[in-house]
Length: 193
Image (cartoon, rainbow, N blue to C red; front, side, top):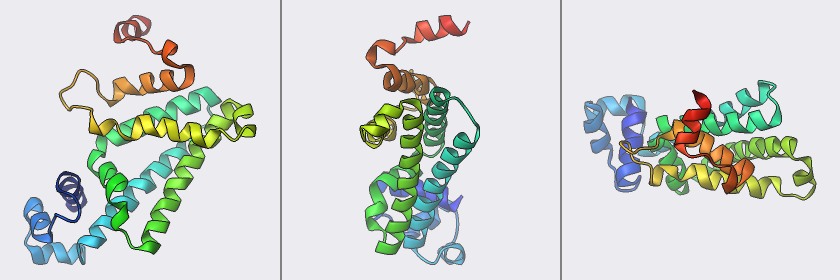
């Protein structure tokens, strides 16, 4: 609960502009009680960033261990990541924007986990299209894919027509087949029913 409220405040106000008093108030705790769990605001930041990136790394491992065909593996990675992002928008924003406030050793650890996530996606792309690995394109393609996924939280609206579940197959179709492979919502409904 403390991390959820802290991530929300950091995502909305920024890490630097948020005080421990505000975190305690958002949590409904006395400041002294908050300090019982976290020694300072920095420890909250580390915990939010490290927990979020560790969950993402876990998703890559779970999907990789499932033994899916390469195309299905990539689709499942996209689906699972967007589901994770939908439930952790604030933590994701903190990870993408506030990692710069981490001390060097902590930043190296968190960014190392991020690199493992990128490598997991690049490996999945390489299994799908081995010639892309030989051409050293799996990582650039992975970064393009993350460009689509990672910034959805900046424009997705909670009450919008599309949600993360609806966007997952669209992102996968666009990435795997280009714009010509993207199906409209009516086409998706017709093919499902």
